[in-house]
Length: 374
Ligand SMILES: Cc1ncc(COP(=O)(O)O)c(C=O)c1O
Image 1 (tube, protein in one colour):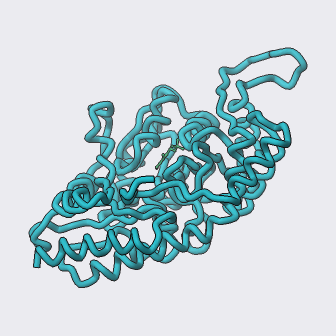
Image 2 (cartoon, rainbow, N blue to C red; image 1 turned 90 degrees about the vertical axis):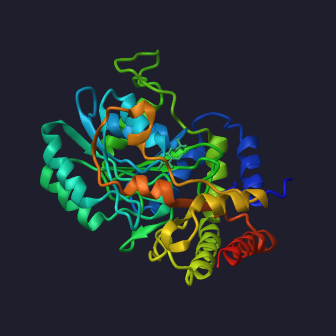
């Protein structure tokens, strides 16, 4: 064990152990089995969708969703530039190109006005829009859905970070033709690695399940007419996911309490805002602050250095995709908001494993820093 306070650690215990051991003893040690079937049913119910397909990662789910919607070479997919690389990578896997669209400076989520501009400029090449529910806060679907509808462009919702969040009462992951969840080790709940494709469309679900199992034709011998993938989730990991799902609301509660604590701590600090703190429906996966240097009298990097010296992990907000060397030359519709969030943002320890002494350590360290800056 380390006394370093981490950003977001896996939160697993006895319940998870008992579910995994039971699955192991059942003999279903394979990427299929009763735990996979049950996990799919339970996630579909939680996310209010008709179908869920369990896969080996959120990235795999994104890839399958794009293929299922017919995205391929010569096409564009609108992606918020402020995201994790997986969102844009999945587009590249299909041979299509990401079109990076800037974000709302208040939320970090896809800017609807700029998306409307991108839809107009992308013309017939724009095959899909891939909004991301950044740090667990849902994008502005009241505005995004009509824009996409008007242009006849399907949405794939990257809800990798947003399981358990809602938007006007509707669960994250349910807003597009397909939605995607991640159960990576750092997420709100984990299967160590894993993901889920969500959809109300039975044809999409069936096609993704087929592609995820090497595109095997339903005949006794091995017959293939499509390129397939080995993307299914292990039955053991699905069992871990089922246990985590039982604890999801408790884990979200802890993260929400942390965000509320940060919001209170920074409430009186001029020039500091807590990103997305005004959304009571967010799962609060990660809490980030945005620092207006000239007003605050210090920069996000100063607080990061202070906390690092006290063994507290922080992370910059995602570096925008249009600034990544690998995507140099990609098409963009920009306002500069994502670049400013990257320059001024700082993600703070947000995990549900943090207990009172660690939370106290983080908050005391921040208060100590703020005292020196008064
Ligand atoms: C926004 C976003 N999209 C996609 C992914 C990819 O998920 P995974 O790591 O399960 O492949 C992640 C997280 O890793 C993510 O944060």
